[in-house]
Each structure stands twice: as structure tokens, then as C-alpha cells.
Image (cartoon, rainbow, N blue to C red; front, side, top):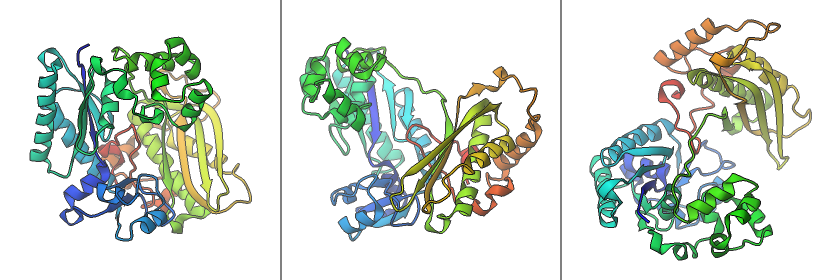
Length: 406
């Protein structure tokens, strides 16, 4: 079974970028945070911080307790995006990047002589050398080489930081047995419990299960996909599609009140609407999410409407959803809005009984913001939150600096 995939995972990416850009942070325990508040969570931690138990998702107040010398660094998403594009160029100069999976992950297909183990390993070392030479030595990466992207990605987690792991056909499946179920992409807490209900409690049992058993456990084709991936088979590739567009934001302490939270939602929706038009899609459903403080849980609302990408129309639906939130509640801690049921604008038939859209207004605003900065022109509802919801980076989407940078 030949080697066909080389997967690259940049270790502690956001923290490593900060240490690369700011020499004073090198060798120190740092945590990258979205806002300066003890109630928020760390979105990245350097390896020096991880030695103290500080990890992604740890509450800032807990992180300070675990590591008294921890340096808190406010996130700078535009810098992470810029460096991401440079890294893609560097990897592309060594091997064609078949797919960018997230801001810190990508893979390339091994073909011809590169399928040979020694040549693939030489290629991995070359990529690491090029990154050190053209970026710096703080951007370490773990590289996995395997018969398919799934196993190559799995290999990147088997040796960190700065690892290089090769999985060949002859190594399967025993080389995987030392892993935990949740070490595999696609198996989270809920899926792990589901597998256990089907009698699959270890990776060895997972590898032993036949295709029919995994189809039953997953309830569909995902089980068959995993069965093939675990055996090194190729052909099971996932291509990202735009299924939704949205943004969420953890509110800074001074914004944890209804008027400011509402303004932040207006800003988030205006960003989402601009993105929607950028991909030439219209949305027919909106989801609103509000998480409250004092452990009062999360409220979600949903609203359907004729397909549109018109900002004012979408803001109207947002305000209608906002009015449906609980009357008595604790302070809002996080807000999010997302647009679903996307369809190409060219396939949308306008509703005869709805107000006519204002495409020229939206186009004018988009052009002004693209040229002079995203916050140059906005609808008034977002004015109080002008600086409150900076760019954020989702797991599987790279922001477009031309339309989303502040």
C-alpha cells in the first residue's frame, strides 16, 4: 500500500505566531485570549504554558491559577491569516497543497517517486527547513505521512511538537491501537458514547469492526468512510461547502448588557451579510444564540423567511428574533448569529409580496468598506459596537482580509 498523503499541522499556531512576531514572548508561557476578561477562555497556549496544564478552552482565571507567570496576549487574527497565506505559499513551493483544512492544517498528495517512504520523509524535512528559513524557528509543525489524508492527519497528533510520523500499510492497524477513540477526527464526546453503546470501547475494537457495524454506529455513510480510512483506502475525501455563514462573539465585561449585546449582534450580522454577498448566496433561515452568565444556560431562536442577502431585510429578522428572547435573564455573555439554507442568488425567485431588495445600496456599502476598511460605513444599529467584535477565526474557515479585516 503506497503512501499518498502528507499532512501538516502547525503546532500551537496562534501562540507560535505571537512568539515568532514578538521575540520577547519566546520561551515564555503565553495564552492567546479573545478579550481581556478572566471569564473568557484561552484560544491557544504555547508549549511552555501547556506544561502547566494551560490548554485551549481553559478559563482565563483557571489558567492564571495553573501558571502564575502566564502572559496573556490579545488575539490578532489578521496577523494569523497573513502568516497562514505565507505558509501555504511555502508548502506549495515544495508540494502542491491539495486542501487547506483550517488555518493551521493542510495536506498535499504524494505522487510518483514521492510515494516512496525515504523520498516522502526527505520532502517533509525540506518543508520544515523552508519554513524555518523563510518564517523563523518558532513556527514548528508536525507532519504525518500515510496512505490517505485521514491517517496522515492522525499521524500528526502522534508526535508533537515538531514531529514526523509515517504510517505505512504494513503498520496497520496495530500502530493505531495505542490511541484513544477521541484521537480520531470525527469522534467527539457524544460519538464516543455512541460507539460504546455499540460495544466499541477501544481503538482495537474500532479497527476490528466491519463496515456494517460502523454504519450502524454512525447511522449512515460516515461509518463506511471511517472503515475505509482506517484501512488506508483512498477516495474518501470531504470537500468543504458553504452550508452556513455566521459569527459569534464573547462579550467584553462592559458589553454584557442588552443594548450593547444587541449592537454587537447587528455588527456580526452586517459582517455575515457582506460575506453572504461575497459568495453570491442568499439565506432563508437565521439562528440567534445568546449564552447567559451565572450558569443560566443558552437561548436559541430561529426564523425562516424568503431567500435574501439584503442587509436591512436580515436586520429586520434579527430584531424580530431578539424580541423573542427570555424577558427575565442574567447578563448576556456570548452572542452569535448564523445564516442557513443558502442558495445561489441566480437561483432565487423574488417574493412578489415582499419589499424589493436594495442591491445598489448593499453594493455601494460593500465597495466603500472593501476600499477604506470594513467599519467605514455601517447601519446605525451596530454603531455602539464598532470596535467590539473584531475578526475571529473559525476552525475550518480562513477569513478574507479584504472583506473582514478591521
